[in-house]
Image (tube, rainbow, N blue to C red; front, side, top):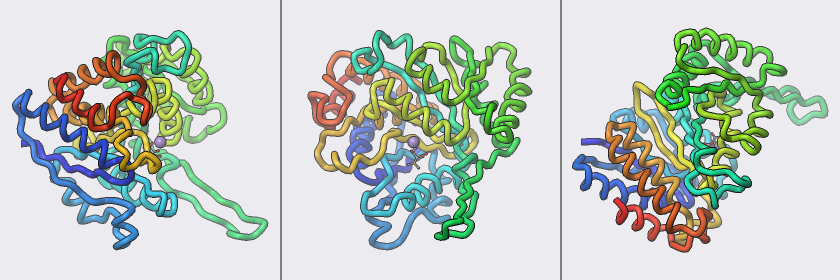
Length: 348
Ligand code: IPM
Ligand code: MN
């Protein structure tokens, strides 16, 4: 029995999670696995009513699940940063989900904003460090509110944190056909953090002679995502750079409507989510694309040992994205949110 915690969240989160749960039910019948879900109301609305975010007892409860399925966080009525840090980052940090795994895969060339790129050209994975860096929240104001104000925001990188992330990335690379790992950093300017990353990368690389290694500055990486995305196989980077380059990655794979990711603790509870936001302007209209959430479900199933079901869902998504949908953008798919979910169920 798989125990899955569901956090529909804000905005369009509940709508896309609903479609994912329909697909989960269909997959369980087809592949003969059992599961139970419990829904958690970690939303901006609840915060505004009760002041509650995610607390330590919630974390203790979530630790008893096999995986977490998350819709979206972010409420325009709440000051930016409160839900993000109090829910999403709290979960990532407290559950030590130190990897943010974001596949960038183009399923249909006609959804790619780049000229002449085909599915074979855009098929890579970003391994984003998910527990340290600038996201650690270290820093201070000095002389706040005066003309001599200074704001300091520190990137915090531990040898252990960097090494476990790099090691994970080598393992991902080793399992792929091309076996190529690129370290994406900024060694030419950020000389403390990226010196540690580069040294650790070089040392760990010695244990993986079968993996080809490479280095690219983060600014050049964004250029190559557009110019030569086919160069990349697996990319490993820190939390902030990973956040930025995966939004660009999502665009070249067809947009937020299809991009999914996993917040992974290899020896704990992992959490899977569509990487787009809560899309307030589309909320409640049944127009948002649920494919990213459905792809996140496929990753979740793979993570809990139902790889066959995960693969079948991905294959169904590919078929529908190639032959049915007019676009991957909200409101332009030619189908409603729930109809897209139904298509996936039917195709399964
Ligand atoms: C993401 C999001 C989050 C991040 C926000 C919502 C805190 O942009 O998952 O990429 O910055 O990590
Ligand atoms: Mn982001």
